Length: 251
Image 1 (cartoon, rainbow, N blue to C red):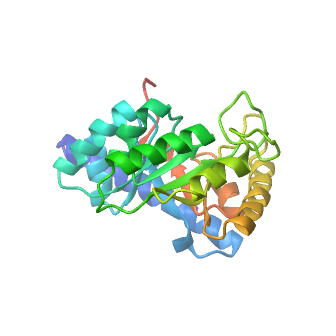
Image 2 (tube, helix red, strand yellow):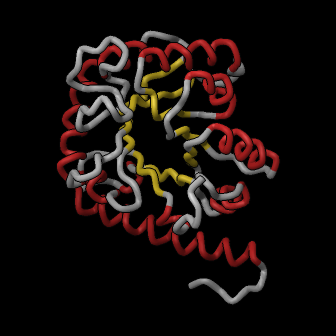
């Protein structure tokens, strides 16, 4: 239970600790139902619109992976968290413009939203030029469009489009030493039952792994549907509101 401390930082830490325990229990229950080891599912805390102080508190509670979806916010937050002495693994999970590639490669450990050959090329060039040589290649997850709608984000699994087709994008990522094709990411489309969406994603992921055996990560599932994602093989779940609370404003 959250204690009666009058210190705002302590109250927030207690709130986050309670929420984190609840999310971890949901993950453990979902893994038990799927016959999986809970250690096979990593929790990414999506902290968009929340301050660097929350990230530092989460790091102190054992959270190791943090997701952000806007470069301007993420770059500043990553610097503030580092200055506070906390160490986390940063995942960029939002739509990424090519002209932000230079900034993102400076702090991100993983980019989960690559969905075009042109973006893969821009990231690879930025990583070659601006990522410290002491750091490993940038891990990339190719974002998949589960419903194949070209109007939304995500590489198209059943299209021959040379820029947006899933296989051309995967090949572009895998074909450069500056990037490492680590797996796939997806969001369940609005109106789709999560079970149907993630069942389709699992089939796509199996096809990709057949051609790219190192692409073993599958980032799927958020606060509302993480159980369905885990049942269909998610290795990473991206949790925001269930962990940090409902956002009062979305910028």
